[in-house]
Amino acid sequence: MRLYALLVICCFSTGALAKEIVKVGIYDFPPYAFVANKITGISVQMLAEMNKFQDKYQFVAVPTTARRRYRDFDNHKYDMLIFESKNWGWQQYPVNVSKPFVTGFEVYVTQNQPGRGQEYFSDLTSKAIIGVLGYHYQFANFSTDQQHLASHFNLIQTSSQEKSLKLLLKGRGDIAVLTKEYLNYHFLISPEDRAKLLISDKFDQIYQHTILVRQHHKLSVKYINELLEQMNQQGVLMPLWQQYGLELK
Image 1 (cartoon, helix red, strand yellow):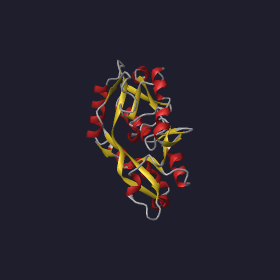
Image 2 (image 1 turned 60 degrees about the vertical axis):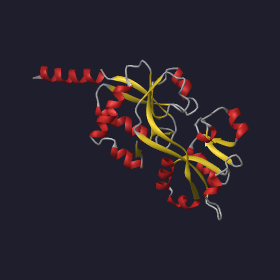
Image 3 (image 1 turned 120 degrees about the vertical axis):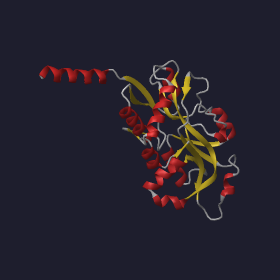
């Protein structure tokens, strides 16, 4: 009996050890990821669900930054990105792209002042725009080149969407570019700020979130697509999307 128990334990231990580690780059992109003392957000919760759902791979979050993520990828610090778009500077990198699985939106936000309406967002060149360093914005043709941005826009760059919104509320800029999902998250915590802000009806960009995987990695995009499809069919991810108000592709 003892021998049988030991064999069972060994089998489970071997199975656990056999899991292939996949390092997943995570940078501050609320509410998808909050990177401070501890990484939290949708990305971490989704990786946990992916780890529970299958036994072949163990997905491990690796912190990076929006600007540093390309260098860290080149240095093989991670092999996968979640909630990412190939249009965000990845066109020349050896990555494979999953099918889109949820939709995200970026909007323009300004202080809600008397007489100010949607026409305020029609001309961005004359406004001081607050954005996050390393983020790709459609109004800037997805460029992160500092010289290009400085010559075409009055751009105030921060390290996070939270700091961008704080600057806007303090009147330190005219317009902040924020994700609609981050605003929804912020209003849950600080509902009093909703009346202080005017949000554009038009979007800076509508993007289809995908997963990027390093080419020639053991983990294939085909496996990722099948995994997400199976998780969706069994209702594993829907509660997470609903928790954060995400829209399915």
